[in-house]
Length: 290
Length: 325
Image (cartoon, rainbow over all chains, first blue to last red; front, side, top):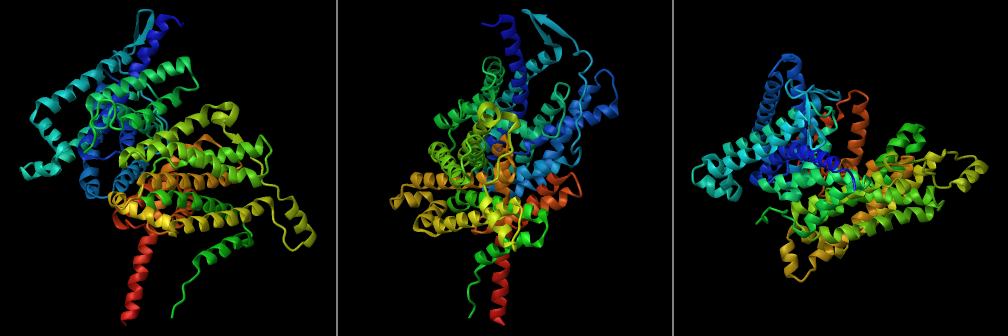
């Protein structure tokens, strides 16, 4: 049996990874829930978020608060980009074959690589969160703790918007029945663009916030999108809390898998994904599609 | 009266003539195209003919490649047995995975094929003893061409190198596989797959066991993908976990779509165009993905039937015009 403090540290690192994944996967899940499309480009939005944050940091220079401005700016840029893409191109593929939608988002991921192409970048942690502290014998970087707290905060904000606000009611209605909502006088097109922008914002934010922890490299989009797929499939496509749960499970399975069965950790997450799809295709907390 | 042009035969003979151009590089490219044609055509049996969008077809390419590679390199089995084994192993794998996949529909089907393919990739990536793990398995031997080479040396009017002999072998084997696949899609069984694609519910009503048909199509597609994998591993001089990674699945899906899923030879055309395009563009710029993405977007909005679809629409229009005149 390994040292308990080590187990604790390991579970915390799993938790940090989980919260990052939740940031990204929640956008993916939102788009699927409302638009019924699996957005392959979401991974690219995440990657672009990291690159834009890097670029913004170069322009802004070091200074207190600059990182946060850069991160927010990056997320907003990606949201704008997502909105443009949805308005100009993606809109025309609604109602066509799913394969075309999937491939379009995949193609989009490729096109978006023009800006930073093939370079590797990294960003330093924001001042004020560079330190770390000890708890139960484990050393926790402050930045990780920030991420662990941010995840549930975003989930709660999300839940609040969806369940308690007028816009949220419209979004839920659009997910249930787009045509009736349109017939009742709601501008569904604008709503779809809004949802796409919000999801892109979350993807870009995830990328921007991950940039101080992991190097920003061109291949990060293909890796993260598969991870996000695993998370949303386990939790349930289109379900907010399902995505949260899926991210938690993914993080713990991966971090303890590496500890106990280093050779089976990757295998385990995909096996879990397959098992969920076989037993409950709509995921742990999702609802079956009609 | 116009007779039907035997396109298949013409392409086959033209393909056999490529090494006579005298450029090793052309032969290399042609070999790549021929193998990917088989891979893409096997996928089209699922996507185009049965209407099942698989996002994990690379799994069977990988299984086939590792089966042939391990048998030939580690166990010294001859190509004569090692290559069919690729089809058998990949087909068996597709049987197990397909059993679960055909129970799901649409997006869930695509996700489950993806999950299984990633499982195969994870196994290939980590099982060092069997697959060589992350490093892959280099130096897969060529099939033994000793007797042909001796014969060639004696007659002295054909002298090719091993890579060229392998190319001829690939062309013949792939032609055979394509012939078999064509027979399959034009058989009553193949027609039934198309019926299922058009309306699975009605097929069910007239007493067709839809799942069983889909499963058989899945296994056949997997087996032929495995055969393509067996050839690819030897051609590539090594087998790597990358063969089963999901980006390979999407690549082959793009080829199928680019060429046109509604025709039998469409995916082959897609493979040809995509590989030539890639080769051309990579020599100019590092932004190959950008070009690929742009091509795809244009295709999706401009030519949803792919190259073959656009070509047949064009030739149909021309034909009508000449007849009308």
